[in-house]
Image 1: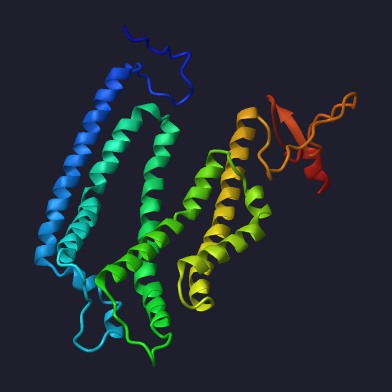
Image 2: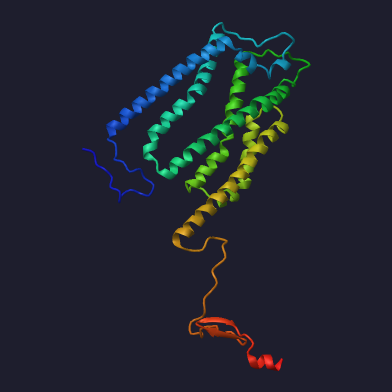
Length: 315
C-alpha cells in the first residue's frame, strides 16, 4: 500500500500526485534505458549507412590536407583500422541522432521529482548547453586545429618529414573538439551553481585573479604548439565567459532579493521609499474653506455671483 502525500505537506510548486513505489521506479528506469539503447542502436545503424554513402572522413581530414604532400592521404598501419574508424564514427553519428530520444527519456524519468519552477529551467539550460557545446566544437575544428597543425608541423621541417597516421590525427582532433565543447559549458555550470546557492557573484569576483591563472594553465595544456597565439585564442573566450557569468549571477541575485523583499512586504532594492506621514502629535492640516467672493453657494453648489441692480446702477 503506497503512502500519498497530502496537499498541506507538499511544498509550493510540487506536483499534486502520489508517490511511486521503489519497484515501480526500477521498472520505469529499466524501460527508459531500453528505449534509449534502442534509439542508440538505430542511430548507429543510420550512421553506418551514412558513412558508406557520404565521405565523412574526407570532410574531417580537411584541416590536415594542406600540410600533406600533393596527392598523399592519411596513412594507417593496421588492416583493421579503417573498419574500426568507421565503427567509431558510426557511434558518434548515432549518438548525435539518438540524443533527442535519450534526453527525452532522462527528462521523462526525472520530471515527476521536479518542482514546477525547476521544470521551467531544464529546457532553457539544455538548449543553452547544446549551443555552447556546438560553438566550442566549431571553434576547435575550424580555428584552433588548423593553427595547431601549422605550428606543430613547422618544427624541424628542414630536416624531418611528416609521417602522419589517421589514428594520431583523429585522436588529436577528437581531444581538441571535445575539450573545447566541455570548456564552453563553463558559464552554464557557474550559473547553475549560483542558482543552487552554492557560490555567489561575490565569490566569483573575489577569485577572478585565481581563475585567470587557472585559465592560462588550462589553455596552454589544451593547445599544443605555440604558447602565445594558441593560448590567447583559447584563453580570451573562456575569460569572457567567466565575466559574463559574474554579470548573470548579479542579475540572478538581484532578482532573488527583489522577490524576497516583495514577499516580505518591504520596498524593493533601489525603489524610492514612500513619503512619511505627519509626525505624532502634529496638528492636522487645515480643511479647505469656501471660495472667496464673488462666489456663493446655492443648493450646495458654488457659483459666480451675477451683478445685481445696485451694481448695475453704479456702473
